[in-house]
Amino acid sequence: MTFKHVAIFLLLLGIVLLYLNINPNEVDFLPKCPLYFTTGLYCPGCGSQRATHQLLNLNFLGVVQQNLLYVLGFVIFTYHIVILGLNRFLNKTYYNYIYHPKTPIALLLVIIAFWIFRNIPTYPFNLLAPQ
Image 1 (cartoon, rainbow, N blue to C red):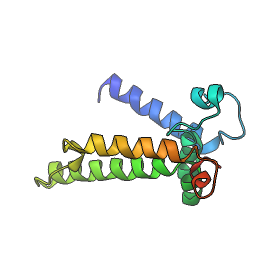
Image 2 (image 1 turned 90 degrees about the horizontal axis):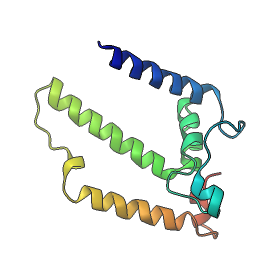
Image 3 (image 1 turned 60 degrees about the vertical axis):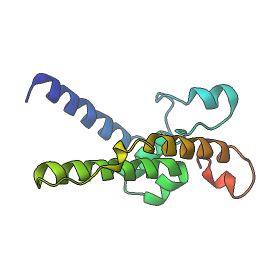
Image 4 (image 1 turned 120 degrees about the horizontal axis):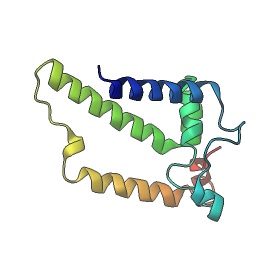
């Protein structure tokens, strides 16, 4: 292990411990969303810090309430890691659909739709806004 790997590990561990123990709703020193601060509109990532705190505290309903797109990102990330692991450690050749040419376009469309829908202030769209 090189110094770089140890430093990255320690940085990630520090971030995990920070979000595990500190609720972003209760402190002012964590960064705020500049789009929401300036326009009052929720970006696709609004609520992600609170969702991370909820996930690390195993409150899965809280994750969904903060940012539903976070759940999709977590599922995609997990899928990617599992496929990489199976291919590497079990010598399999499963196709990773993350690398499909149309995947970025589909994800972009989902993100844009989520961005628009979460800013509509009527039911059921207001359920997509961070709680």
